[in-house]
Amino acid sequence: MLNTEFIHPKFIPTWILILFMRIGVLIPFSAQVVIGNSIGRVLYPFMHKLRSTAYSNISHCFPHKKQSQVNRLVKRHFEAIGVSFFETANAYYGSDTKIRKLLTITNEKFFKDALKEEGGIILLCSHFMPLMLGSRALLLNHTIANVYRPQNNKLFDKVMVKGYKKNGAVMIKSTDTRSIIKAINNSLPIWYAPDQDLGKNNSVFAPFFGIETATAAATARLAKNNNTRVIPYSFIRTTKGYSMSFEKPILNYPSSDPIHDATVVNQILEKQISKSPEQYLWIHRRFKTRPNDEKNFYKYN
Image 1 (cartoon, one colour):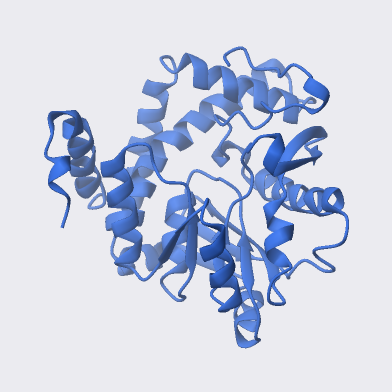
Image 2: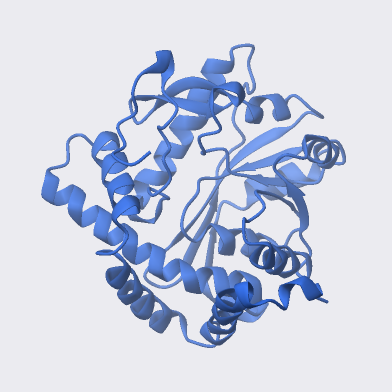
C-alpha cells in the first residue's frame, strides 16, 4: 500500500505518468514502437542539454562518423528514449505472457551452467534504453538481485521497487555494499550495470571507445567474493521484440591489476553497444570526470 505522503499535489504529474504507463502496457508491441518513436521525435527539439550531451558522447566515441551521421544517430537515440517509456511500463505492469512472447534468448546455457555450480554470479550489462524491461525479463525464469540507484522521485521509486518485488526480484541499493556482497556470498545472481560516471574516488581510468574514462572499480572488487563468475548480459530491442543474450564468463577475472580489469569490462560494453548504438544511454555525461583535471567536453555542466 502506498504511503499517504504521496497524496500531495506535487505528485500529480507522477500519478498521471503512472496512469499512462498502465494504459501503455495494453498497446501491442509494434504500436508501442511507432508511438514511442513519435514521442522521441517530439522531445528532440526541446531537450537542448540532453541533445548536446548525446551529440558530444557519440561524436567522441565514433570519431569516424560524419556530422550528419552523428546527428542521425542522436535523433534515433531520442526515438529509443520515447520507446523506453513503454518498455519501462512493460517492466512494471506487463504480464509474463506478453513479455515472454517478445523474447528471443541466446546462449542462456552460460547462465544456467553457472547456476549449477556453487559461487556468486554477476550479470554484467550496459545502460540500454530497454534496461528496466531486461531486468524484468530475467525474472521470468530466474531469481536475481537488482542493484539499483534509487530514483529522485520517491513515488516513482516506490512504484519501481514494488513492480520488481512482486515479480520475484531482490532489490538492493547500489550504495548498500554489504547487501550486495551478502547476495554474492549466498550465490544469488546480481544484475549489475557499472557504466556510469561515479567520480574519481570510486573509479579507475581505463579506455572506453578510445577515451580515458572513469570506470567503476567495484565490479572487480565484488568478483573477488565467493568464486564469482562475471557473465556479460545484453538486452536490446529488435524489429520483432527483444534479444536477450549471454556470453561465456570472463576468464581470469579479476586480476591483480584494476586498470586491466576495468579495460576488460569496457571492451565488453563497447561490443554490446556497437550492436545497437542508438539504444545506449548517450544522454548520461559518461566522460565528465577527466584524468589529470582535464576539462571535459560537455557544453552544459
